[in-house]
Length: 163
Length: 329
Image (cartoon, rainbow over all chains, first blue to last red; front, side, top):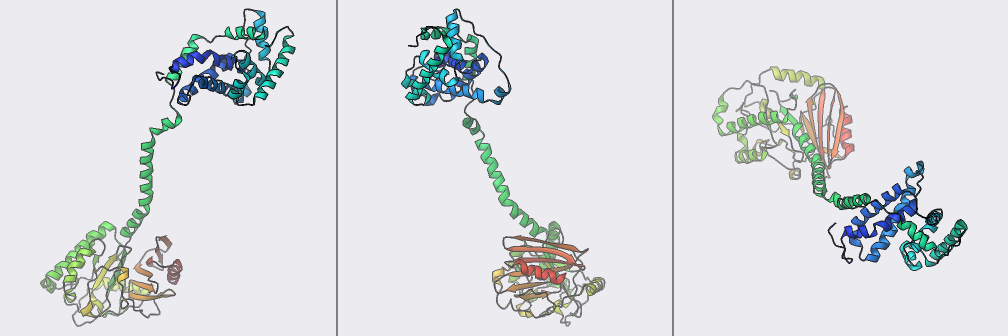
């Protein structure tokens, strides 16, 4: 863990701490379960330590972590244990009803729309960055963003602007 | 507005510090990649592969060596006083250790008799065969005996033997062999020099222990006689040696001709250079043929009608060996 990143100048621990919240929240957004999100986060950073030599820049590290987090989250649903069990319902509490309403509206979206909405509105990533990170066409990202917003408008029924 | 509320909602979600530390701790002591973990066993795996490969490679050779050493062909040549009756002895093929010990003694007796001819004056009433082995000590003895005149060659128990060219003995019948064997075993052999019988009442046994060698007695005039311990390769068999012997009783396979016949065995050869050595001994109960083929050599042993037959074929085909087996059975 004392190894410096090749181009970042940060140790592995520093990189993990810097990206920990991002990974955990993205995992929670994908899995909708804190326990699964923790498992995914741990798996992601173990893979990061194993593959840190291949990551050359800070942007590369972030994109790699997002990609691996999404893949690991998908693998949770592919697990036979997940198919045979029903996760406990977890209710996250927020200090304001607007936050809760918005958060659970996004959680109700299908996974492919939820991912681009989360990366676009929370990680502030552009369509190009999302398309590169998810290895998909920018137009696909745009269409998913559009359809996700339409679903959110129907779900929220409020005057939220999706700028 | 949506962006703001969504960001605030996610910002309010924070993993516990314990969880963060546990992940960092696990990452510190994470296992190395699978490939790196297996590298530490590479040396042991390579050594194991070498050992197994060596064992697999050496096993056939060890098996062959064990087989050759343990069941060497025992050819006993015995002639009675008349020279016309020959019978194989009941001597079974001894164990390798016993063979060496026994043959060592016999070799010593042969050597001593050669070097000390005066000891042969002592009368010998023994009918037992003096046996000596070829493998192992052959080359050493060959040098010694080759230096000696061939006429002085004897078996240490009867110095007055007048060796003449032995005639190929007919194949003994099983019943007759039993009787003659008993007779020759019980009756002491007292031979005179004028007998002229093949071997003059001598009885000699020798062992062909090495698969790539054929040792056979020279059926030539006494002047040309060489010691039985002379080691010879198959390739050394000359045209004179391979002169066919005509005998209707000899189980000569098709395409082969007999180059050597004795009461206890035959040696066949074909034009292609294949050699089949057949050894006959008295055996016990009937035993089905056990045939092994390896590296161009065929080894077969079986017992039929009280005869224990051992076949060693070099360069021969299986059909010829089976033909010989069928003639005995």
